[in-house]
Image (cartoon, rainbow, N blue to C red; front, side, top):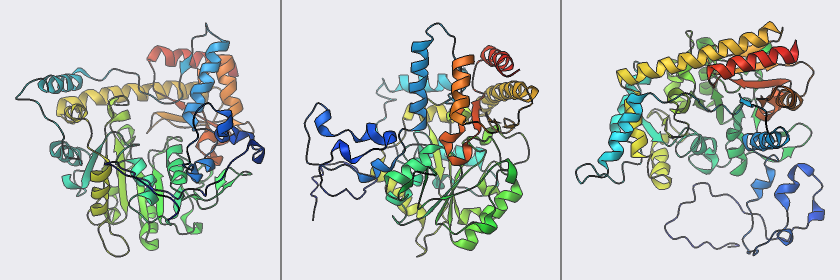
Length: 458
């Protein structure tokens, strides 16, 4: 065996092949995008071990989108120290969590300082009361049971996106093939890290083993499944981040039928379902037969302002089976129990309060506030004659700038209007010519951003 491992009560959730032992020199690389990741040990102070790097890390794009934006924000602050920056970029919530929810977390935290109220480890899958509450609140009438809900510390971590988008290193075969929308970069990056994506194609920015959905205004943000090749895993986000588009019932029926016909599994991200204003499905399980082909991932982050508290969930139906008829939920439960000790009990207490009648009503008012922001900022772009998508069923607007580089538009808004957005290209090749604008912000900031945009593009 080429490599030896000494393990002492540690968990390696995504084991991947290591590259052969070799010595890298800087002359081997001329790609400026990755040069920062390929600094040789001789150029860095420290001790070089004999442990090789995961070769898949070198296949990642030059930087994860949001840290890259943070870096440019910092550079802007150095260049314009007195400018009032309006952040409509990363999409962090801004309004306070309702008191009924924070009070529940405070009460739980205080109880931990008493003999009677102290509790240590909880169930890895989550507090059963919370699991049942999630099933009743979000999946009433579609047959999801509490034991099919796995609570996590956010949709992107633990038993959420990381566990299922990095699925080849966890519950599915390492040879599984993925099918992606233009969406959250964490989907693709997780698959690259576990060795699923294949080699990057520099001319397109795509990866050879990944099938990309073409989802834009020209096809109503839904792929032509009749011309799509079969893949094992289909990643689908609705309402979509970044486009803000919520798939219709008919579209999701097509998706479920496609998955059934091809023996595929859908990973369905419903993190923004609470923003849906029309009759678009809020869960994939509203579609008959979806429990046989879909895992759903969701979060309290944008629904309840828990971006800092961290709480999410994943639904893995008992009906979902591997090709050998073994239940996926059993492997998923094993992965969670092996690699995760459960979400914070304080966060889970807050989650229960969110799902109470009073808590849910208070959160609905906050969501309506953000939707009002989306209407204001969307109206500003529309008044300038621009094509604006999204905003109705999601806290994001997808704004089209024909013939322009999305990074150039991002830079123009940042430098000339001091408004931070997200370049569409960061979500994939299909996002070129678009920028994503977040509706998360204080109302006065949204109104000021609208005025600045009108002055910039009048």
